[in-house]
Image 1 (cartoon, one colour):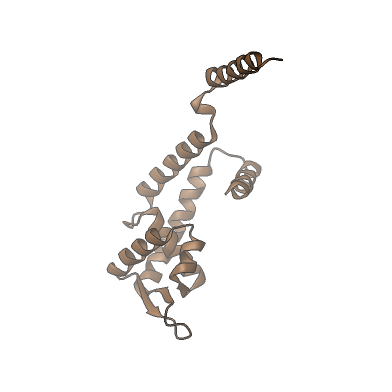
Image 2: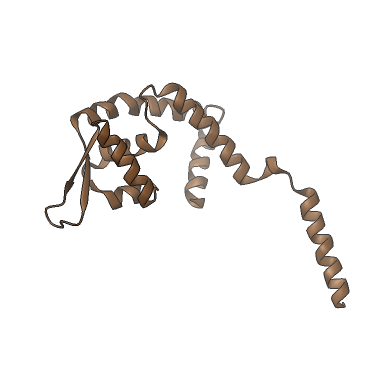
Amino acid sequence: MTKTNDRESSESTTEQIVRSYRLEDQIGFLLRKANQHHTYLFSQNLNADLTPTQFAVLAKLFERGSVSQNRLGRLTAMDVATIKGVIDRLRERGLARTRKDRNDKRRLLVELTDEGKDMAFRTIPAATEITKATLQPLKTTEKKLLAELLKKIS
């Protein structure tokens, strides 16, 4: 095959890919739509004036107790700037507090206040119901499979 034939073959392959591309079949598009649906259900049903990221931090702190800010960011899949902002907002609302680690003065530990624990008790059951509503169209086996597959690619 000559260079011209190779280029023509490559162009025809590219053209085929471009012509057959359907946005609604792409995983990124489907994930975004599913996330939009879940976020809508979250905003309509949590009734606590918490963003999804704030709720994630609240729930993780409730689960783990006192955690370093750095570790909390990793546990909730948030970058340094995002986790700092979320913690600041939770502190302003009296739901969380920070303190220096006794063993490492450079480390900042984050924990829930009593108000934060109360908020967790009120919101975690609602969040569980929101997850059920998001997954409602799926069969039990499909729900488990979806969770497994998402964990595999994340």
